[in-house]
Length: 103
Image (tube, rainbow, N blue to C red):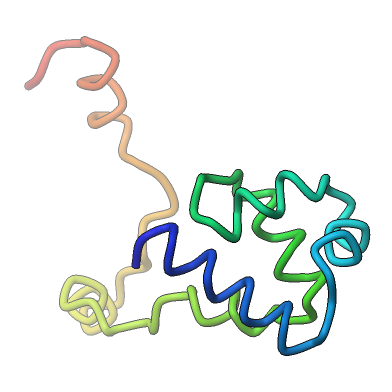
């Protein structure tokens, strides 16, 4: 989905709630110009987008962005062997990334 289509969804949600751009911008604590740019797909920051979504009381949109967890074959293999998922990269990997020698 491109920015224009997403902006159009924001605009439709605002109009469905019968809210002017000025009112919604005030609720979201942003300028009306920023809202107009968002609605026309001219770009926005993630922070602004989240403010708008919350001001429209549409946090469910944010929840829909969370990917559905899938079973990782590697995680399944580790679980079957009784191993825990790694919490950080190994020291060997960190050393290689810092430019150290590989063994």
